[in-house]
Length: 315
Image 1 (cartoon, helix red, strand yellow):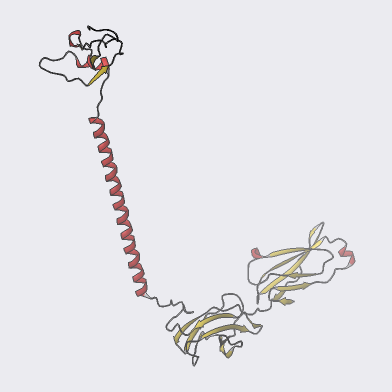
Image 2 (cartoon, helix red, strand yellow):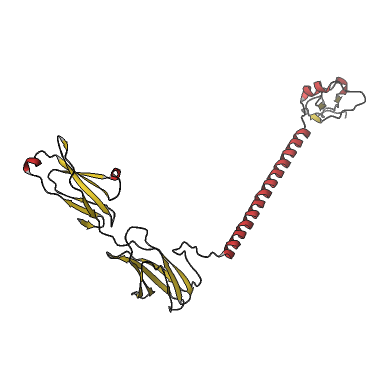
């Protein structure tokens, strides 16, 4: 017996007591009518159960059902097959699309529901926002999928509602808000057509993206070139400064590498250092040429008379 679009109930008679004592339980076998045995489903129940419900079935679908009793010796022969059909469900919510023709008219397109449930027709209604109640309900047979609504309020906003129905009742409603101020706009139809594209806007957007991309690429290239130029220039000057730098040796090392002075070449002293002497010293300051060991004949001695002592003199 069908209880709902997804549920079937099966009832069987209790066997005689002498048979029931040897029964362990029952196994019910169910499959869609016309499908192979490999698609068969099995459900086990206890030996005290004589009624069972099959759930999660397909609406408006016919099934074949039988059962077997099991004892310690094995399975019995199968019972006679019962054929039952689930109730038909209401249609699912239909998809629909709208196209604004002008400020007072629109066209509505819809599709057949994709889920199970036979559709007998459609109910189309609409209301002006913010009116609370729907008005102007139209009923169409199952083969009609478009309707034009006219004589509407100019540039107003309307709510459109579409319902699919069959002998089991109305399905879920699908609703959409439409503004008549958007004249000329359209949506995908049930025949698979696409809404007209605004090619001019798309072209302008593409051109803008190309220009921005070109400018960005040029800026990146220029930045890289400047970076390489400044890096090369800095490296060049660093190398040049290193080559031209003084590597001045010190003291005797320089004298050893320089070797004996060549004839006719006058070497200028680098630094002349005056070594002052204390006032009470007899020896005058000595000038020494730094950077080379001067010979004895190159020393210049400047003698100064000692300071006059008090109490001495000629007169």
